[in-house]
Amino acid sequence: SENRTMHINADKSPLQVFVRAKKKINDIYVEIEEYVAETTTFINALHAEAEIVDKAERELFESYVLKVAGIREVLARDHMKVAFFGRTSNGKSSVINAMLREKILPSGIGHTTNCFCQVEGSDSSEAYLMKEGSEEKLNVVNIKQLANALCQEKLSESSLVRIFWPRERCNLLRDDVVFVDSPGVDVSANLDDWIDNHCLNADVFVLVLNAESTMTRAEKQFFHTVSQKLSKPNIFILNNRWDASANEPESQESLDKVRSQHTERCIDFLTKELKVTNEKEAAERVFFVSAREALQARIEEAKGNSPSQGAIAEGFHARYFEFQDFERKFEECISKSAVQTKFEKHSSRGKTLSGDMRSMLDNIYERITIFRNLKLDQKTLLSERIQGTETEMMNVTREMKLKIHNMVEEVEQKVSKALNEEI
Ligand code: GTP
Ligand code: MG
Picture 1 (cartoon, rainbow, N blue to C red):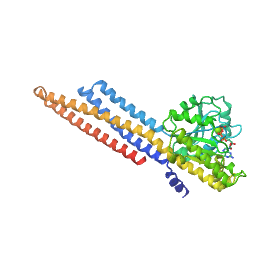
Picture 2 (picture 1 turned 180 degrees about the vertical axis):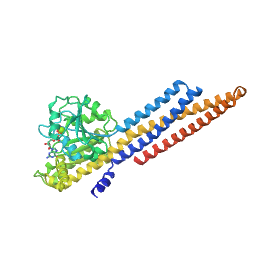
Picture 3 (picture 1 turned 90 degrees about the vertical axis):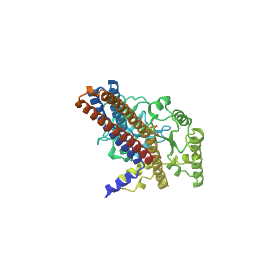
């Protein structure tokens, strides 16, 4: 059935690498959480019964409960973030719309993006937006309303509007990709603030250029600053409006020349100027596309028509293919990068946490052993009943200790396995 095909295709998406890793790490934390809860009960009982565990130790253990809960919360909110930059009117909003397969962000004359707009998936079936510093959910029925809402208020250009779009309407949103659209880099004096406020946690950057002109100083400067603040950011370059080249009277030969000149400049920029990547990888990061055409093609597709009905100029198929090729490479890059930066950190914290729990229980076990031997030495003073309790406590502690040791091993194995499989 159609549903099944959609499902199979969606699972082939490279984004699933992230989705699976997130699930695996979460399962590991569910397990840690269970052990922590069980151990807490045990430690509290020890404290009450025999005062082997002191108050500070109990509190320390309780802090693990909070830590695990905190990590699980962060984990649930983890996503892959891509941010788009470039000069005004190069087509940043159009590229995002094409990727989302729907005209969500306002674009074109009169709809210049004047603040940061973040599009993210929501479980609700209706779209809404939230402005920075407010918890109010503003309903968005259609694009016109969204455009008006964005124009109406005097928003500072570095403030952020979050647009929550139903996950079910787009695979990228369903798989936790978050899009950030920005005002043109040429119109702002606050690029440093932009980077500090919106870019430091981006997994991928997309520079949207106008293929009809060359890269500007403002565009270059922006990415110089980004790469000073972040070590080796992942940058894709889209030479947009490539459809316009088809309307030029030039020969194919001279168009090929333009294309290879642009390509060379983009690769040099990534490798020699920014030094963020090597030649081979850079060649996989530069594309010639038409966002407007790709969006139109997808809107036709959604209506059940052939995508070529969205064509703007000759050469549609090659450009549309290149847009899809960009999306594929982008998905591979963003999921891999997000797994590395986010989950490696979560899993090493998980290992540390379980390791700490282990050494704490080892200590307690040792103390109980000493305590018990001491009591046995004073055998005459002890009734049989008390001796029995001592031995039982000893056994329970040993059991607990073994459990935690097993857990630490299991967590270590699972974490290594999850990371090996995904990276
Ligand atoms: P700002 O928000 O003002 O910084 O601009 P932007 O970079 O978001 O550009 P936007 O997507 O608003 O596009 C500007 C205009 O260019 C719109 O009218 C688009 O339809 C048009 N446009 C965008 N991409 C293409 C393209 O690939 N080909 C053609 N022919 N037009 C395009
Ligand atoms: Mg825009």
